[in-house]
Length: 222
Picture 1 (cartoon, rainbow, N blue to C red):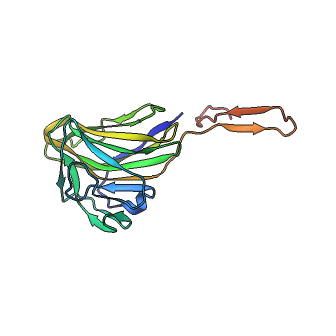
Picture 2 (cartoon, rainbow, N blue to C red):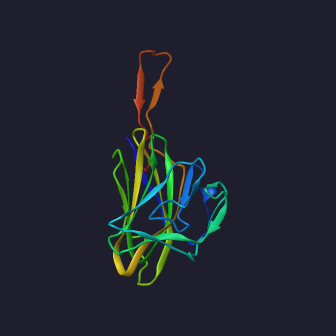
Picture 3 (cartoon, rainbow, N blue to C red):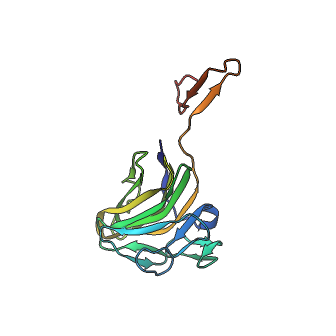
């Protein structure tokens, strides 16, 4: 059985060090490149890709309150930027980020934002070993011509190898000229689902008992 949990979703204008945060992989969209092609990525890291949804193209923007930096990138070894990429065409256009998934537990964080609207973020595993997870309330600019910067992160683990996690970031309410934006994505070690524990008693060699631990909650008997 896989697992998928939203572990954070909040506004933020803090600087982001992709190298420090994305120990297993990272990508950014700081340069003017074709469509949603990645600008910079971690040298030797896990592969991260993006694609416009709903017919959305993309365009570069600058002057974000956040600064992203890195020191282990390719094609540029190190750098910093306040640029990102945004969708065009209003609702319901957006961008989908795809990252590797396997029986290893990972954490993915998307540094993103929404301008002049409300965005819905939906994460799902390709093997459907855990239910999809959505957030349709956090990313809300509240009014027109206002930008909401922030990040959202998920802990995830597939039930088999060679799977993917897809995170769709879609503008669902448009206050006028709305769009969603992406600055960077990072991957690090995550927390997966508990596995089976095998208990054996040496004095009872033919007795083997297995159990799956339950998350602690008040009233659970241990």
